[in-house]
Structures are given as structure tokens and as C-alpha cells.
Image (cartoon, rainbow, N blue to C red; front, side, top):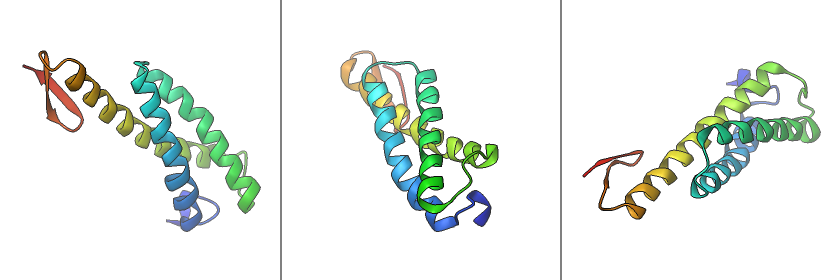
Length: 112
């Protein structure tokens, strides 16, 4: 897994997945609670990925301007944010409109 980040797998996991993923989860949850569109989640993750890459650079002498590492970071954050967005949106739909929708899985709902 050394290929995921120029700093090593442990640094990648802690900084990108745990810390950056937590920020991505909370950001996407907040956007979903505000009834924002999913494209805004993708835009916010572009900014968050840049911040996480900066922390790799500032704290662990990682490469700052690498398209590969930025893309990997962005995709990891987008996956976590997409999961959080869909979980929150499903909960919103089934709790605010219980006469219209019922939960069919943790990530989806269906008509009653």
C-alpha cells in the first residue's frame, strides 16, 4: 500500500482516511441536511482534498503538487462523503415523508 501516498500507508490512513474522512463525512452530512445537491459535495471535496494534501506536505514532507496523490486523496474523500450524503438523505426522506417512502436499505428508499 505504499503506492497510495508518498508518506507511507500509516500516514495515509491516519491523515487521509481518519482525519480527512471524518471531515468529509461531516461536510457531506451537513450538505445533505441542508437539502443541497450532490454536485456541491463533489466541489467541497476538491477543496478538502487540497487541504489534506497540504497537511501531507507540511507535516510529513509529502509532495504538494502531485496530480496522482491529489486524485487518490480526492477519490477516497469523495467515497466517504458520498456514503455519508446518501445515508443522511435516506434518513431524511423516510423520517420527513413517512407516508410516501419507506427504507429499503441503509442507502435507499422506495415508495409505499
